[in-house]
Structures are given as structure tokens and as C-alpha cells.
Image (tube, rainbow, N blue to C red; front, side, top):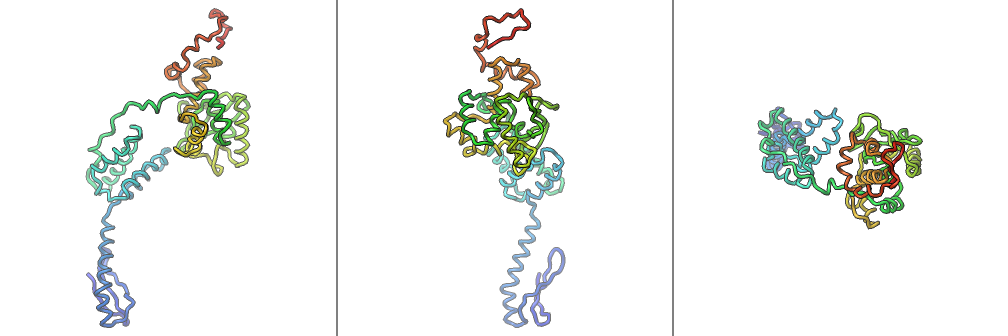
Length: 362
């Protein structure tokens, strides 16, 4: 409802909104022609504007409830990981009205993640379900559509994901001789300590001793935490072959005025992608292509260390398990036994099992 009237010779429009009556000057003098123009142009435009505004006020965008969901998670250590999932959910649904999102669309969304691991898909479903739960609490919807959607069945672990493919000594030598400085030092630490990628990224200058590295933290997706399988500090031997790489990275860290061995703008890295890059053009992927080395996940640097130590016979399985952060020897024996088949035949024939001072020399 709108009306036209004159005030001090200027035409005004008076109209009603949800917030009450309002008025707006047209800036036109009060003439018959201008009154016709206001009726013909101004009033239809105003009506359309008010209709669109009312429609917008009635909308309940999914982003609104996603923000409320994130507020409920802001004190969690995994906040940034959750936020990453929320951002991708919003990108998929393009800020639709949450009441208009159908079960069939949610099923299609879940199906679009078929290439991801079952655990990852479950995390996305849990996050999205939580957003809809907030909408229920706000009395915008009555029922969570995810009651009709089951979590994906646990698939058999993809062989490629878990396949242990250690690098050969020749490949390690070629990689370290070719790779750019920062990635070279990162890989050297990984190859010669068996540390996980997040543990290497979490190293600080103060963690490096003369002969040992004290492993106190790990970093993944921007979150600093204690080591994956041990709450206490883990001590890793610093082999002589590694010391030049470590010293070079310490020099770089001091130049960057950072306590972190690997940093950006003085702050710790967000995660492994800051070092490895993204497929297929990141530094790690380019390096293997340029060297003609078959692609393996960067985690195989850890497998390389463990298999090399097992083959060397320099340490017991228990000692190796302690170095790499396994709580017991079971995993090492189960996962790596086939990579050292035949090594028992290389034992020195002078070995005397009755002599407690004698060691197996391979």
C-alpha cells in the first residue's frame, strides 16, 4: 500500500512495511506530469523492491545455521578442520534456503564424495547433520533430513592407500641430490628418522640436540598436538648423515627469525601440503616425474626408514618401534616382515646363540 502527497512542493511517497509506515522523497516537483511519472515508474519499482526484500527476509539460508554451528565448535582443537568441511558444504549448496534442500539432493551430495575415504565422508555427513540440527533448534525445520540418509558402508581399505613402498637407497640418494633446499631438508629428516610428516613440521630449533631430536608435537591442518601414539616426549637418534641437513634448516629458521624449523612468515606451517604441494604440480610430484621415479606417497619416507633399520640389524625391533612411535612391535612385525624376507639367510655364520655378548651381524 502506497500513496502520493506533496510536501513543500516536492512529491513524497508514503508506504507501509513490516516495520511500520515510511516515507521517501521522489525529488520531483508537484506537477501533474510528475505525479503520472511517479505512478508509472516509482510505485512499481518500489513495490518490486519491497516484495524482494520481504522474500529475502523470509529466506533461511543454510549459511546462517552453518555460522551458528561453527560458534558451537569454536573452543574445539579441531575447529579449523570442521570449518574447512563447512566451507565445502556451503560451496556445494550455494547458500540455499535450508528448508528447500531435499533428501534427494543430500543423497546426491554424499554420492559425489565416492572417491573419498569412508571416514572422511562420515565426517562431512556428521557436520552437515549438525547444521540441520541447529535449524531444528531455531524452529525453522521440524525434522532432520539426515534421518533418511545412512552413513556409507565401510569399504575395504584401498590397497594403494596402505601399500608400503619404500624407496631404494639409490632413489633416496638421487632425490636428496636434486630436490630444492626446504623440501630436501624435510625429506632428509623423514628418510633418516622415520618421523611422520606432521611430526617433522612440528619441530622447533630447541628440539634439536647434539645427538638426539626430542619429538614433542605434531601439526596437521593447522592444529598443534602431542605425537599421535605417545603422550610423552619421544627421543629420536640424530644420525651423522642427517646433521648437515638439520643444521642447514636451523640456519634458515634463524634467518627467518622463527622458532619453527619449517615456517612461513615466522609461523608454523598449516600442514604437509605447504611442503609437498598439491597433485599433480606440487614440488613432490614434479620431483618424482623429473627423476623418472615411480610415484609414491611422501609417507613412504617413513616406511623407507623402518625397512632400512630392520634390514641393517643395527637395532632390535623393540628399539625401532620406540624410535618411530609405535606402542609395541606388533604393527612393525605384521606390516614390514615381508620386506625383509631372506635377510635371515645373511646372518654371520660365526654367530653363537649361547653367547649373550654376541650380536647378529647382517
